[in-house]
Length: 199
Image 1 (cartoon, rainbow, N blue to C red):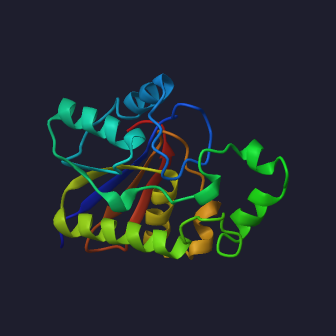
Image 2 (spheres, rainbow, N blue to C red):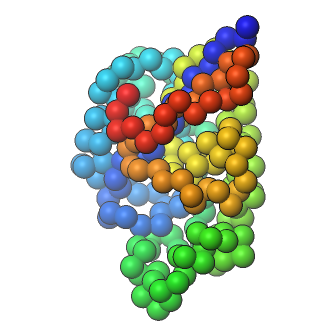
Image 3 (cartoon, helix red, strand yellow):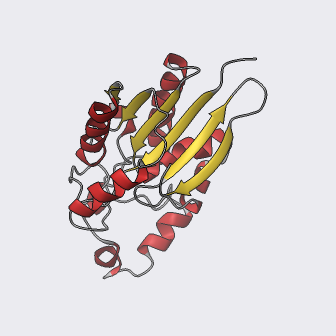
């Protein structure tokens, strides 16, 4: 039987400025966000490799955790959040101020109702998949921790469950919560849990 690979997916904590469509805007974690992240890893720490988005709301914590646990860290540009174009930095309330249905249309059909200047969903899914597949190839049989964004985590889980791209926004990913995927030679990739606040 092939060696089992475990992948833990950890979303960043709350950034400075509260809830906004940040995309690739590089806001740091708030004090509360740091607390959330340390709480999330306050139990077992089984990881042998950390892979992080390069954006500071992920990478700053990943680097601190890497140093504390003395395990290697790699930043992968392909794990950046989905680019939201003209929506970046805006809160849901700001977006709906002049168009109350703007978010509803996007969540139901992100292809047709893409924000102006936003990254194409298909391109986003492809780049995340390339990063994820490379991580699996390089670290087969290890327990990985990927520190990333809600969109990245949705894209990885949807890929492993063979869900269509339209399913991405049917999955809630809370700040500083964990999901775990198991890959072995016996079963298809299996989502072991989703949305825990600590290991």
